[in-house]
Image 1 (spheres, rainbow, N blue to C red):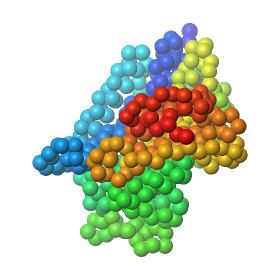
Image 2: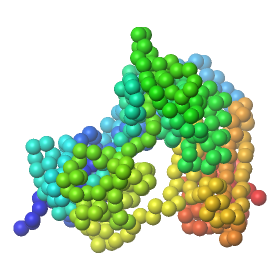
Image 3: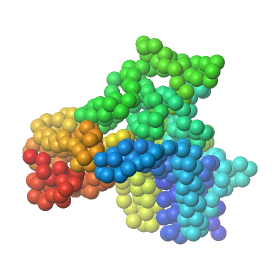
Image 4: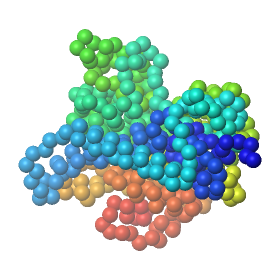
Length: 447
């Protein structure tokens, strides 16, 4: 007779939790998964996927302009926000159903509601209580909210996907990838955008030269930046607009305020204290290299651990957990040299060390760069330039980092990330014949 109702109970049906549940069930484990909102998690429901679809939609604004120099006559152009919004939400619905179908096909029990630990083996979902041998927490992270007077008048990225109408003016608080992505989307759709930053630069985790290039391009597109401007208060005006007080400059009047100021781990009110699970100061669940907490049978993966807040990382952590615990095929996720992208306008992609990180770690490095105008921009009459950058160890010739800003940066970075992860050298890139004419050929032509 089984001592527990389930072999594995997963709290959170996002990318990491769903992967862990599906793979574990495939090994024959009796698995249940609980989700308070919608199956699919932040990435699928209100994050990467719908945001990328908005990026595609916004990009047509420039494509329609550029088409003229390629011989196309565009009689008129009109953008309808409701059409894009509703089509994106319909795709989210489709993906939500696909995730549910995937879990059901593996005979995973789906429980809708907030799951709370009562002890290390007992979980309560509403008025239902179940027991499990192993528990995996995969509750992700949530949008940060400022602590200031009137903060309730702003929204987060979660609500952007459901806006009834586009505002004429928007203030976006933050300097990270979410802030810059939505700044590019709103700007392309004709909204006046102001980016409000607490510090003195944007995209701190990316190579400074690329961040400065994005700022210059964004400024040329009409996006305003306010640096060193921490929140003071937000006031609701009689006419419905908002007055945002931040920093030493005059307050900004806006129709919409969006917070993109970080994503704290979503670990509150899960009963972790009752189960004895240790948390970091920022609320992240502490785990070891096998994603195990200090409680032997409780694990955690994804953004709630605050190791690397990226969907593919959460998926790999969930897969490693399932293989290790239920598949008798133990392995660990390597959190070094992880590629990432910012779907700004234009996009940025990177892998490995930035120039400053490489100099600090290796001392003597060589930096190769190609600063060029893409062929399409030349014919379109667009002055926007791309920048490709390689950081190479002087002693070994190994590529330590690669950084791109320009069209299709993320698509180009994926295969390049393989080369950097594999430890290939600059000489090996030089030996590779270029695919011509492409933007990506610049990677093998830098001298």
